Image (tube, rainbow, N blue to C red; front, side, top):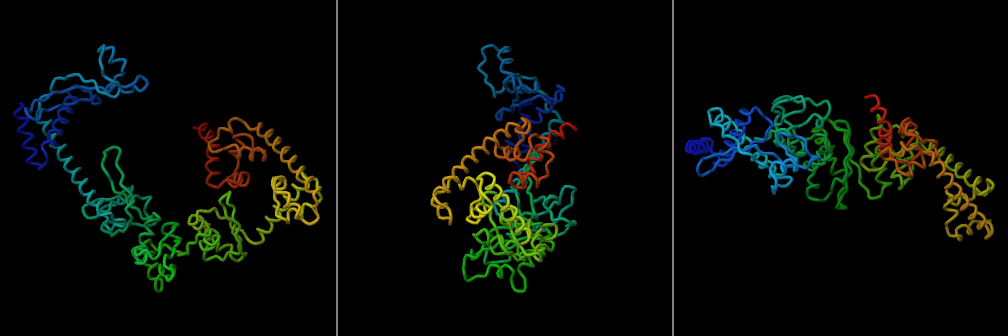
Length: 498
C-alpha cells in the first residue's frame, strides 16, 4: 500500500502539473475525511501524516488544550485539568494539541476521488491568487471591465482574467447594467470570505476618490502637480462638489478643471450618470472656503464658532433657497466638503437671534451684578458676554470703559465672582437630581449632564423623548453626536419590546 501511495502521488502531481507536496497534503486531507466518516463524527479533529519517503501513513485524533473557562467544544477540545487527570505528569501546555492514534482508514477509490477534487480546487485557488496578484501588482486605481453577470448582491465585472464585484451599495442609484456592458469603476479593496477564504476584489462607483481619479484622467495638470483636488463631497449620481487648489499661480484651477465649454467636467459627469459637479476654490481660510463651497449662493456674512466647530452662514432672503438647495443638498454637500457644521439663516433671522442673545446677556448682568439696564448695555457694547469675563479679565479693561471708576470695577468683579460661585452650587445641586440610568447612557459626559439638568432633563426617558435639534440646542453638541446619544437613551425601549 505504501508503494501504491507514492505511485499515486507521483501520478497526480504529473497529471495536474503541481508540486508533490500539494498532492500529499490533499491525500492527507482525504484520508482524514474518510476517517471522520467511518467514525460518524464530522466535527472531530483528525490528522493524517504521510511519510514522503516510504508512503506509510498514520492517523491521529487530536484535541486542543484549553483553560477550563474557555472549554466549549468537547469533540475538539480538552481542558488542561482533564489532560492532567488522564495523563498525570504530562508536560503539555494550554494551546498545544494532544493526539491519540486511530486505526488507518483504507485508501479506496472514494478517498482518491476526494484527493483529486481537493487538488483541482487548490489549483484553481492558486490560479485565482496568481491572477489577483498580477492585478494588484499593476496598482490600477481606475479599472475598465465588462459585466459578466448581474446578481442580487451586485454586478460581477470581468477585468481581463479577473472577476471583480461591484456591490449594490457601491453602484450609483438608478444605474442598471446588463451582461456585456462596459463599466468603469474604482478599485476599492480586497475582501476575504469568512466561509471560503477566497479573496474578492471590490469596486466602487460611489466613492469620493472615484470622482477625484476621473478628474485626474481628464486634467493632465493634476498629474503634473500644477493643481490638486483637496476635497470631494458627493450625492452619487445627483450632485457633487470638488474643491481644487492651484500649486502654480499662473493656473486658474476652476477653469482648468471645467475645460473649454465644460468639456472636462462634462466628461466626468457623463461617466457618473449625469452627476452635476460644482468646481469650487479651496482656501485655507475657513470663512472663504465656506463661502466658496456654498456656491452658487451668495453669502452676506459668516460667524465661526470654533468650540462647536460650527459656522453660522447669513444670506439674503432671496439667496436662502439657493444656499440650502433642494432637500438641503447644497448645504449638506458644502458641510461635507468643508468639514464644518453649517447653519443657514437669513439676515432677519440672524438679527432676531442676536437680539435674543443680547437680551439674555443683558438680563444675566442685571440679575447677578445688580446693575440697571443702561450699565448692562454698556458692558454688552464693550464685548462682555459672561460673568467669568467680568470677574477675571484684567481690571484695566474695565477701567477703560467710560464712566467706570476703580470702586465700580471692584464692586462689579466681586458681584460677578459671588454669582459664579452661587450658580456653581446651584448647578451641582441640580446635578444630584439626575438619575443613575441617565448617567449611564453612552456618550453623556459630565458637562452634558449639567446642561441637561439645567434644562430640567433628569432621567433617561426625559432624554429619550428629546428631538435631535432640542438636544443640540441644550448642549451645543453636533447633530451626529446628538443622534447617537438619543439612540443610546432609547435602547432600553427596543429591548423591552423585544
